[in-house]
Length: 454
Image 1 (cartoon, rainbow, N blue to C red):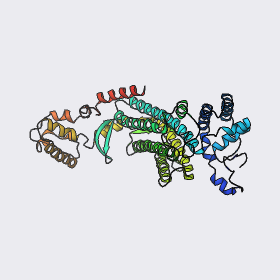
Image 2: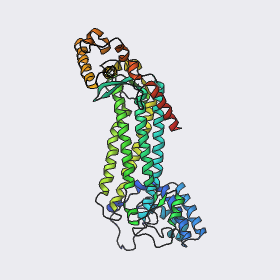
Image 3: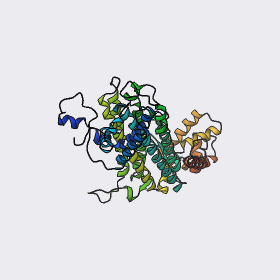
Image 4: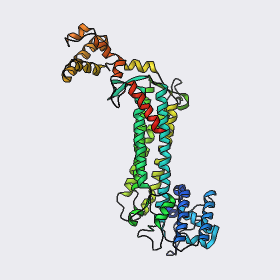
């Protein structure tokens, strides 16, 4: 490997097999940690001043050289990004560069850079989730009066406002944001100063390093700090749950965009056609989101599988942690971004959706509640309405199309007030408790959602 500058070798007399050297190298993957590792290296240089290993002038020279390395294009290959940075540093400042690794190991160095990168990525995904929440609110407000069927078991159940559907996913993404914030607390602990596994012999002020790098605290056990990746697994798990929510959103919209449902239409910006069938308009953006969910789940499982049988402390197996986590982060962030674009590029077919919400006996529960309000026990009301639904099915009519006389064959004391209770407007308005789909409640929740984002 040209210009590699290995961080080890004194104990070895022979060269590594070329195929093994390529197999052992992680540079193609972990080069993404360049900026994070340089930030941590500058903080370590400052700590070495306090420990009496470097002078302030030497630390300034090292820091300036590291900044220059960060700004320059990568010019060579290496065993890993950490070897590359040290090799470039020695090239820039000579023997002084070799002092930087005093009091640290690649074990705590890698863990520190990884945590810094994950911290930034958690923040980036959080910002993207908020952008998608904003798109959900905008989609809700574009069609503020739209109604569509709500489903259980993919059977029409009760009518809900389109905005209520949008706010359901807003809530899911809100919990995702909370998960990243919570995971960030455990990511944001400094391992640097743990060295290889037993801690460092040099008088390094780890708490000062933690403060300089924005960590909440320094790790309390060196063995744990260099050898666990639970913080990365937790991050990948949070990504997996985001993808569960995105996949469900995608599935809903794929169904709603089909000719069988016809509730929404995707613009040309987020659709594709068929190479054979000229009439087709396919929701490919959503299908890709749904498909990529499995990929992120695999990343999460891969990391858990790598870690499950490792003895303390560091093992080379852990080199496999980054590729899985990087892929989970990249895929999740891209999918969240695309979901926002899709939401910005869809239109609700309000007439079609309202018609679907007005048929299929979706007001059956409202009729039962109406009967309860007139003094009938709910179980009796449920049974009576079931018989009226059967009557409607047999006669090809909705509940509100049955006459009072027909209804009285099942419920003798029913009167004309039943028709108001069965109207779509009344059905929606009755769901006014916290979390319900009444227009007033949904508008209030939209305002609360916008306030939360602002």
